Image (cartoon, rainbow, N blue to C red; front, side, top):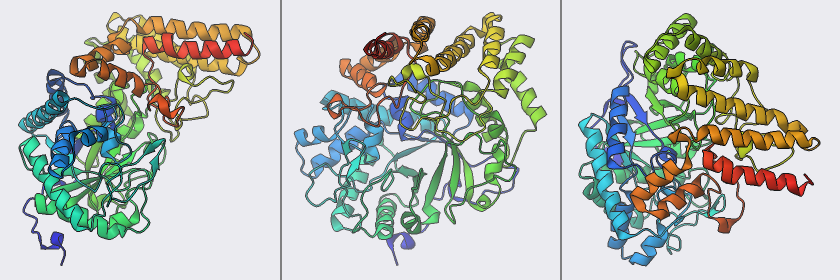
Length: 560
C-alpha cells in the first residue's frame, strides 16, 4: 500500500467532489497560469494586487496561482541543504523569467537578485495569499517535483529548453527527493503562513528527459510527498501539448488531482455542435481558456465559443468535469471575451446562450462599459462580433502585427508559434467599426484600440508589394509612425508605463528585465532564439525605437 493509499481524504475541497446537478455553478473557477504571472503581474505592487484580487473576487474566481514568494522558499530550502548564497543566487532568475524557472525550463536568467528583493518577495507572497483567502480565493502554491540547481551531482540532467539548459531533477523515487521535499514543504508553510489546499508543478513540462526514469512511480512519489506534508492537498497539473504524458496520468491519484486543460482553440464550440468535453479518464479536470499569448495585442477571440461554454461540461468527460479556468498569459486586451467567459463561468453548469441571447448580452455589456446606450456602439460591436470575435480556426493567439516581425519580404507571423495564413476577417468591416466608435466620445479608448488594429491590418496588406514597390515600403514605415503616435495617447500602450512599474519594485534591473521579455525574450548572449519576439507588444516606444529601425535598416539594405 502506497503512502497516498494510506492517507484518508481528510480534506477534500469542492474540486474533488461530485459536481452535482446541472443547476449548480461549477465548484472550481481558477485564475492564472505560470506564464500569466510573469508576463502580466511580474512587478505588481501591493496596492495593485489588492485591486486585482478584488477583481477576481467580483468575477467569481475561487482559486488562483501564486508564485510571488518562491524566491524566498527556494533560498531557505537551499540554505537548509547546505548551498552557499552565491550558488543560490546563480540559480534564481528575475521576476520576468520566474514562470519558466518554476516549470524547470531555465535557471538564473536576469539574476542575481539582491537580498532585499528576496525578502520582499516572501513578504509579498504571504500578503497576496492572505488577501486572497480573505476573499474566499484559495491560493495554488508551488509544489516540489525534483528540480535542483544546475550541477547538482545526484540529479538527472534534463537537456535543453530552447536555448537554455534545464535544471536537473532528482529521481522522485529516491530518498534524497523525499528529504528535499520535506524541507521544501516546511519552508513553503513558513513563508506563506498556512497549509495550502492546492499545489502546482509539472513533471517534464514541454520536454525533459525521461529515459531511465519510471515515470509512473516518480509521479506517485511526488504526490506522496505532497500528501505527507499536507494531507488531502490537490495537485494541479497543466494539460498542455502532450502533457501530462500517459505515464504521468497513470501515477496520479484522482482523489488528489486536478487537471487544467489549457485550450487555445477559440473556435472550439463555435461551429461544431458535436464538440463537448475533454477526456482525462478518472482524473478531475477544468476547461481553461488561453486566449492570449505573451501579452500580445490584437483583436481576437470567438464570442460564440464563450457563449456555449456549458458544452465543456458535457460529453465524454462530464463525470469528471469540475469547472473553468482563465489562463490567458495577458488579460488587458479583448475585454469583451473575458467578460463573457466570466458571465458563463458563473451560470449553472451546462448553460448556453442562444445567438439572440448573446446579441442582447452584448448590448447590455456595451451599456455597462460606456454608461450610455447608443446605436452606433451597438453597430460597431455587432461588426466586431462578426469579424475579429468570430475566429473560425484554431490558432495560438491573435493574428500578429507584422510591424513587430523580424523583417522579411514574406512576413506573416511574429513569434515562432504565431498564427500564419493572414486575416480570417474582412479588414474593411473592422475599419467601419472604428469609424462608428470614433463618433462616440465615451468609446475613445476602444476607438484607439480598434484603429490600432486597422493600422496593423493595413501594414499587413502592404507586405506582398514591399519587395518591388518603394512607395509601399514608405507607407509601411509611415504606418508604424502613425500607430506609435496614436498609442502614445494611452498609458497602457506606453512602454514607459511598465518600465516605471518595474523600477518602483526593483529598480533599473526590473525595467531591463521587462524590455528583454518583450523583445529578445532571452539574454542577447544566446543570439536569436525561437523565443525572440514571442511577447511582442505594440507599445508606442517599441514601435518607434525598436520595430521601425529594424524594418528601415532592412529596406535600406535592399537598396531603398
